[in-house]
Length: 93
Length: 93
Length: 93
Length: 93
Image 1 (tube, rainbow over the protein chains, first blue to last red):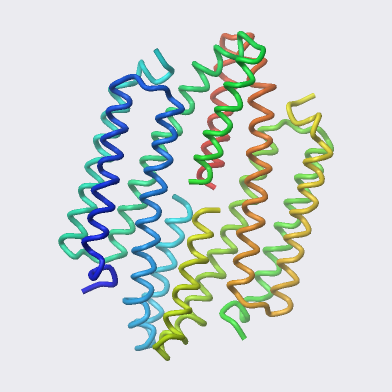
Image 2: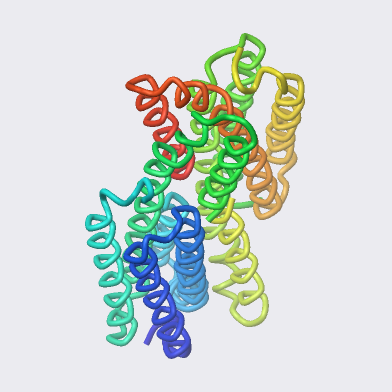
């Protein structure tokens, strides 16, 4: 049971849509579409992935991190450090 | 015939791998994997997409933009503006 | 008293260094330095700012958000939503 | 004489404004402002720097890269590779 569990179906739907976007990108390359039009769709897929990441992160903060923070101590510190590292990876990707 | 045409197969291979990463993300959500582990994989897929975009962009600059620049005039200006807009979308996504 | 309070001096030092980087950029423009060299320094200043942001965010999660989470209820929800919004702004900037 | 030369004054004005934003950030830290408010201003300064970078890049493509592309040969290839590297640094920062 994680923060994203109640919204599992919604995340799966979004990820299936992103899978469709990536397949659409393959079709564009196969059909020799114009580079700039492909780039526009790559940006759209990237933004969709980032939006999934931001959703998962908010669910994680509101659930796992919040529970750990309520307990306090080393467990809380470790969870917060772990979340901060994930945020850094997200910002840099 | 575009800048990416000679590397079409390589782009298709990379996009198929990204499609696999996105399907892997769905499996992680279905199997109730830990949020942070999912986030790490989302960051990896995002970086892979960005890397495809940077490749397409370099091919585009070296081919379509370079040709237009060699012609000069309004065609060149329009191509450069179009490329700059695509770069801005990429930086902001 | 906030999460960043114990590291105030360190943040001020880093921000003063970034101010110096931005003044250095002005000097490069005034001295007609090569565009790509200016761009390299803009990227360095941007990364330094993002690194300050990631530090402030981790301090915020470990202090303000952790305290609110320990209290629970609506206060916790509001703090987590606020932090998630700040993370989204950071990822998109 | 570079692509940004005709807009030098405008770039200097924007960079001075960003310097002011970074000094404003120092004042916020000194005055113990709320972390989230500081983060909002860091995001604003980061976006302003990125916008300067995108401007410089477009000027560079329209001037130095276009000239090199018109000449063609190895000089053109080297300029395009250099620009692509700068774009990659920008996207990753």
